[in-house]
Each structure stands twice: as structure tokens, then as C-alpha cells.
Length: 277
Image (cartoon, rainbow, N blue to C red; front, side, top):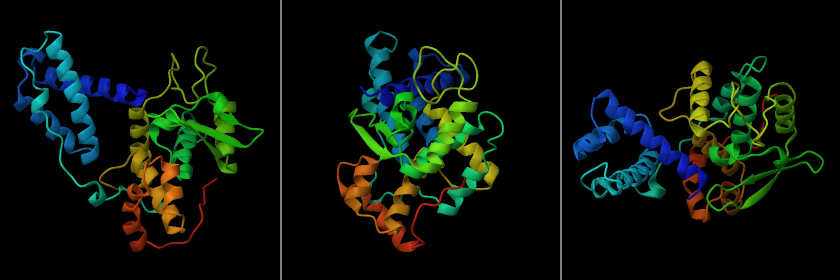
């Protein structure tokens, strides 16, 4: 099981338990009606694809409860993910000006501004996913060679990316002035408070929404994926080959990237990747 999947499974389990505690319900008394209410409530805040992932994690947790005797019946079979056609799914892209507004809204003069700016810049500049950014370690930044190494969370395959000058400056500022001197972990991005543990995908999502609100950027779904999709659309706008964009994003097929073409046709802007300093 990939690290990201395990984190998601644990997060969904905690969310369900909290949902039940608020309603003063015990796991042993769970019904499909309760699960439907939980999923519907969550669906108002996240995308359909995220709901599908949540349903997968929910089934795993329900099977655990049933096999350990905490749930008398197997409810996992009754949890159905929403159906949608992948190629018809609208990408959650933001105009590039909105991406820059969000980045510029980050106050880097006080913690955790330098950390957050570096994280969001990595998402925007490379189209990395949250799990790829969270997995970065100190040794993944090769300053002499000018290379950034990232790992695919599912396959563990390592990729090498050019260390762009704005990214190098952002990482250097974070490492020099803000990253806590934590022992026992080589993870690049840590929480600002003790015990200085590696930050989570939920923390990234929260920070992105915070800065989007601060920048006055409104969208139905704003998170790491919005930055990732916006990067892909930006590259398609600039005329990048779909196969190359697919490889950068980690898609198995360039057909997965074709969803961005529709966005690019509607929004042909200038090329390049300007990054706010």
C-alpha cells in the first residue's frame, strides 16, 4: 500500500468516527443510511474523484471493523462510489493569474510563509502532486547539479526535474530561515510547531484554501490538484506535447491529459511560466 493511500485511509476513518461521535452513534450500530449521510455531507466539499477515493478507504475501514468484531454485518459491499466518465470530467483548473495572486498573498516575513510559498511554488511550477511534495527529503535537492528529485507515491519511481531559479531561492530561504532543526527526520517540509513532524496533505489543502481566500480567489474546489491541473493546462496552452505533459504528471497514457485540451482551446494565453518572486 502506498504511503498516501494509508494516510487517506486513516484520515477517512477518523472523519467517520468524528461524524458518529457528533451524532452520538457507536460504530457497532452503523447502518447504510449513516454511511450515505456521511458521504453526501463530504460530497458537498470535495470533487467526485475525491469522493470515489473516500469510498474506497471507507470500504477498507468497514471491512476492518467487521473482521475484528466491531461491526456485526459487512457494510462494505453497500458503499458505492459515484459514477463518472474520466474523459468527461472537467479539470479543476484556475486561471494562471489566480495562481499568481495566491502565491503573492503569502506573507513570507513570518512563519510558516516561507514554507508555504515553497510548497505552493513546487505545485505550480512542476505540476507535482501533494504526495510528491510531501515525500521530498533534504537530499532530493541537488544544489550543485541543479536537480530536484521527486518520487511517484504509488510506483516509488524517482524523477529528476531542473531546479528552477525561483524554486531554488524559495527552498533556500525556507531551509536557511524557517525549517526547524528537527532530528530524526530528513523530510523537507515540517510543521512549524513541536514535535516538528512532516506536514500532511490535509495541511497543504488547508493552507491553499487559506491563501485563496486571502487573495480573493473563488472556486468550487481549491487544493493541490487545482495547482497541478492548472500547470498542465498552462503547458498545453504553451504547445507542449501531450506525451511529455503526461510523463511529467505521472499519467500512464497521454489520453489522460487530453482533458486539458478543452480548457486550452477556451483559454489560449501567452506562453511561458512566469513565477512571482
